[in-house]
Length: 277
Ligand code: C2E
Ligand code: MG
Ligand code: MG
Ligand code: MG
Image (tube, rainbow, N blue to C red; front, side, top):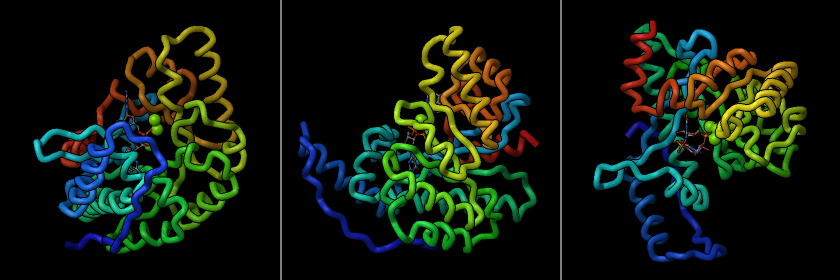
């Protein structure tokens, strides 16, 4: 009730070789039911200022509690939602839940921070993209500049023109845009030059090996490059103090990772924001 939900039909894709076709079908049916039962919810993972470690933002990440009350791994259900495009609908529920929280806090005069949302590939190519998000925002009184979209480069690997177009539309609607997973092996520097992005998120892969002279030099240079192109740098997947301190020394703006906070339920995030102020 109250949520914006489009009617929906889906196609069955069979181009993939499926090891366990039955299990896969079961999961497809279960995800559709889970959507209807509002079982997909949003967690939030705080982002901190690289220097002060104050919470300066958060990323919305979808979670699904199965019937046994356990979290279903994101990697198990997200590919299915992306293939059958249910992700478009699930993302609207995630967005609505977070907007409702922001709206409540703004009305209660409590502190808020910008929240970022991952844009799915089916939604990226959907002509209703901007309207879907602005329709929900219009139900609430939330300044557009509190909303950030994270775009993975894999979405548009060979479609820089589309990337440019979507980023321009999102920005002219008042939203910020971030390039997600930079450095995961798909990244190319043309996207940095072509899309008018506000920030870039360095992928966790930058930090997996122990920092040595070469990996430090690469991180330093990439941070400097992105910043000199006028964008903010956010490091994600930071798990150690060594990495956090090094990123701060490099001039990285924000850090997101288990070293500071794991993704958490919205209520827990609100309690943190209250403490923080
Ligand atoms: P992402 O956007 O790059 O999100 C960051 C992922 O890294 C999240 O995984 C997060 O839990 C994990 N992470 C954060 N800090 C650390 C750390 O210090 N160490 C490690 N090992 N991992 C860390 P999650 O939630 O499983 O999401 C995986 C991917 O699924 C996301 O990658 C994003 O591309 C996609 N995704 C997640 N939630 C949503 C959603 O609501 N909508 C859409 N369209 N995609 C989503
Ligand atoms: Mg992301
Ligand atoms: Mg990422
Ligand atoms: Mg990532």
